Amino acid sequence: MLSLGIKQSFASLHRVVGQHYVRRSFALSMQGYQFGELPYSKSNVSSKPLHRRYKSVGSSEVHEDISPSLYYDKDLGYLPLWNQLPAACKIESVALQQEFLEVVFADQVRCRYPLEWLRDICRCQNCFNHITHNKRTPLVPYPPKARDIEISQNGDAILLRWQDGHESSYASKILLFQYLHSVNTRGNDIVIDAELVHWDANISEDRFRRFDFESIMNDDRSLFEWLMDLRKLGLSVIKNSPTRVGAVTELCERVAYTRPTCFGQTFQVEVKENASHVAYSSGPLPLHTDTAFYMVPVGVQILHCIKQSSSGGENIVADAFRSAEIIRSEDPDCFKLLTETEFEYFDLGEDYIGKHHAQSRHPVIRQDTRGRVKQIVYADHSRACRLDSELEVSSKVFGALRKFNNTLNSEDSIVKYRLNDGEILVVDNYRVPHGRMDVDSRSARHLEGAYLDWDEISSRLRVLGNKFI
Image (tube, rainbow, N blue to C red):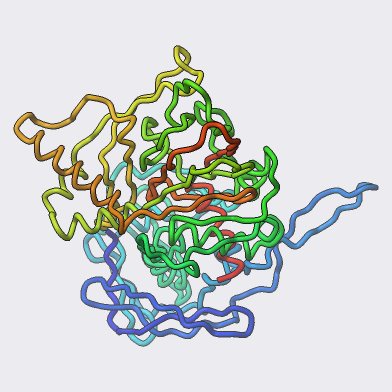
């Protein structure tokens, strides 16, 4: 972790969007100091737009403005509106202190930066490609030494000459705010840091929103609201979609790309006699997350109801994050076993026997570096016999698995929803196990399914977020 000390305490930073100032809070505390209130200035913001250039009929060059949500900074290039920087703060003094560079800005704002970090972020033409925004050089193989560094500054920038003769220049505003921004994006990313809403069987009709297919396909704000709601809730239904094969692909391509699996780009779900896969049988399908047998399971499942004339066949879903948190609070040892024990899953696939054999191992619960539940992998019907635990604790492992299963499948956890023709059920496969009740095999039932991955969804969300937040 890069250490940075600030003498003065502040409350928040401001950003400019058009003519309006919007307060943006950064809770950054390092070495006992906090960043805080500094007004943004428009003086360094250019109206220079970002254009896409192309040749039109007749070979005349056309410029199309593609940056309604971007602004241009002369030092850092094109940035989202919410990332606008203040005017440069004057540097009063600099000093080398062993492994750190201490910089004192106006009003005695004092910062320290590790020399390793400064060398690593050098933005000269030899170290950084300002078109692709990528580093050109690897990490320097030797640590910089303060005694071998020459230093100078003119109030607006610092010039460092390193022990190998390389020179790096750092504008004052970059030193003061680029690192501040990079640290605080940990708490302000609209995807990673979204506040998730847990739900149970009593989820209200108002909270369980229905989105309109045509609105999502034609309006960016509707697309953003749908994806954001999916991120927070893990569950949504889209209505009024065309009742034909291919509509689910169009929806996926509105976001990014479909995630292909061993079942293809999409898959057709219809009841079959003597089906070799439980998903195509008429019997009940228990709660599960899809592709548990993959090393990297799919992120989101989309099920489009093309025809549903059969009786029964209600879809069932549950919030597994809620179940995991219940277990964590009631039985921490059980929760720990579910995060540490890997279970093996396998699948031969409908009509694929002899052509593929997918197999992988996962714990039921995965956490992020902050201890938050980030992924559930659970498909009891495709769980293999292999158990990754010591003989002495095997009974405890099965007890933990049973507790998770009972909590997930309790009456106060499961939501039942029967899809109508033209409705699309979308679930976060990292969070919401889904299943199905019995189906009348004598009646018609046709669903088309597809998958998306969270990386593509997250990318789309961030681009749309720059436009609407």
